Image (cartoon, rainbow over all chains, first blue to last red; front, side, top):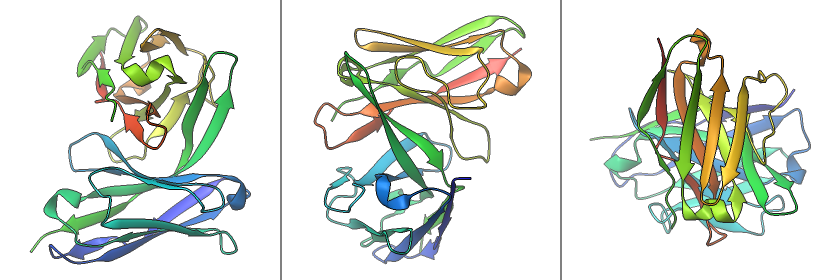
Length: 125
Length: 108
């Protein structure tokens, strides 16, 4: 069965760095685009970043662009998120999620069909 | 980037029907997906595309899209359906994705 397991969360001071990892299993990792989504305490879901199946395309939310870097190692079924210059507002549970796509005659759909359990990042002095 | 707007909260009597809406310009180009999230848990995909449910999701969950509005309907709501529900889609820019503001569903 599909499994996504995040790790690497913790407490970091403002301006610090942290690297999150997501270990994938139960599917052909190299065939799927992947995302990171976060959720601040008591708040809604916020999309953070996307990486294509082969790593050639990467997109970032405006709130993290220039500070966060997504990467993947298809040989190790691993997804990573390097977070630099962390701010208090980056405090959240970070989820990795798999993307699936569906196509219809009138429009397409992009869905996050599997999610990890999340890892908590706390930015505080 | 685009926004997806949802009602903040709705309530439904046990066994009755409730509809949750999601409004945004990106829905004219892309179908929404819907996620259920219970406290302390990761989001769970419950509906996607035109009106498709992942394996294991009860058929009381259904969806529709008209113009810039997507809807999730729970027909015969059960106590276990009490949760936060989020819609999401790809953004019209093509290089961003967006989540709705979320709807808290209370089953009375």
